[in-house]
Image 1 (cartoon, rainbow, N blue to C red):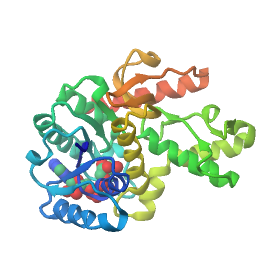
Image 2 (image 1 turned 45 degrees about the vertical axis):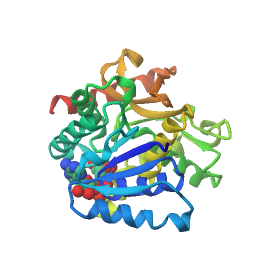
Image 3 (image 1 turned 90 degrees about the horizontal axis):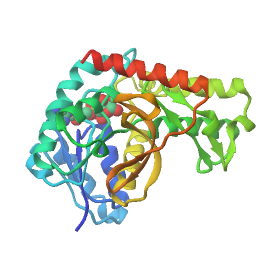
Image 4 (image 1 turned 180 degrees about the horizontal axis):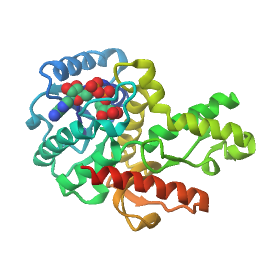
Length: 306
Ligand code: APR
């Protein structure tokens, strides 16, 4: 039997993730959305690419959560994206209502699922899903760190004119301007970028990474990024459903790790069939610790405004 993946929100991010997941045959996919016809149309269109892309999983679109029943993984992308000049926090009031109602439906039909939240502001939305679902912490997580790290990796590879494949990076903390890119743990074929780039260069790449989402929003004008977010989602889904146990930065619910309790923060986790199977605690320098705590304060502030 195939794994079943539900993607809530058949917009830019949701449909891109569905396409990539289908190409990799990770599982059968259900796209669900409130907009009538959109998930059905995109689902059918994607299904019709099967003979050309050689995949055999099924793709359907629906407005009915009954069709999502017994999903193994549910990805929540429902909500509104940013427009130029908006911060992720500006989406809070609209998206909290959407994410709450979506989570209730997901829990009703897929009580054993693993939920990956993508809607922004991410660290608050994943908190809402955890509270509303009552799921254990291993089965609720947020997608942010994989995307932020991918942006950091891309900028490093572009600067050095080396393969993206050989470039690794780690970005922790909140999904926003106070994210914490860690150059010490970012490498090209195992060589720390601190050996390869000047401090000024690294600082400017960090700054671009922090504003990476905003850079795309200001170019697109009518929405936010979706190709890299779609890829980041699929990397997480694949690690879970294929039990790959990859170590990826994800928003995980902290209970004392890194000295923080009761909020979601981007930290390195082991992702396998049980979801977040382990939170990896790495040693941070005083400077990194201060940045991480500042990041945590920002998340706490957003949650307080819920
Ligand atoms: N239930 C299901 N789907 C919903 C609901 C709901 N209650 N409310 C809105 N949606 C759907 C919309 O109909 C739309 O199809 O969510 C989809 C969002 O798609 P886009 O507007 O294209 O937004 P997208 O770029 O995909 O971003 C979605 O991901 O990265 C984050 O910040 C981004 O919060 C945003 C989310």
